[in-house]
Length: 249
Image 1 (spheres, helix red, strand yellow):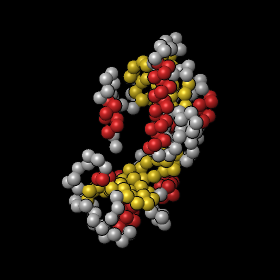
Image 2 (cartoon, rainbow, N blue to C red):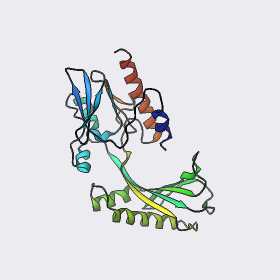
Image 3 (cartoon, helix red, strand yellow):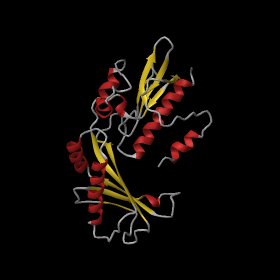
Image 4 (cartoon, helix red, strand yellow):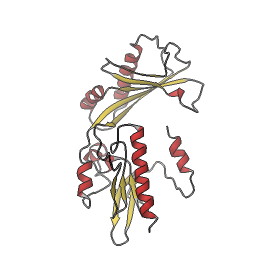
């Protein structure tokens, strides 16, 4: 899933930083530049423009999850702030399963669940190009209602290992309940996807949010549609806005 990012990282002129969280974006009016600092307060540099692809950079939810204020203060752009204020989302738990042999009882590589209270979707991750043939891996998604119930019981903080273990067990049991003779996996790991699928699109026509004076673009699936296609279209729109204005500097 990260092959696109890996390819971009090897483009000429690209400098990549990994394991770094942005703690603050600050617009320097006197320099007409953005100053970016990490979660530890250390400077990450000054930049002509910023693209943010996570709506939580301005959301109160960022404080709920991390205990820190959101990195981006949009008081200078109240029209953008209003659009980003409360974007409804559907949460999800994802479960990765690995099996020592292909699941021959399953005749397809992906399917949806119609009447399950726990699972909504299953897909054979090993069917994607370039995946290892030594084992077969499947990814399961929970229903939004199941995820909301778990989050209501455990809170927005990072889920404990015990919570994730329980979720993994419940999701796998539901998978086994399909009657497809699914064996025990050699590996399983659950992950909470708290803001998995936006339930609204805030910039369908523009495809991204853009402040031309500050050279700030905000993009993501929440702008266009709640899928990877929506995210790509929004990212392309943000890139177009930024490259057009930077070519004039």
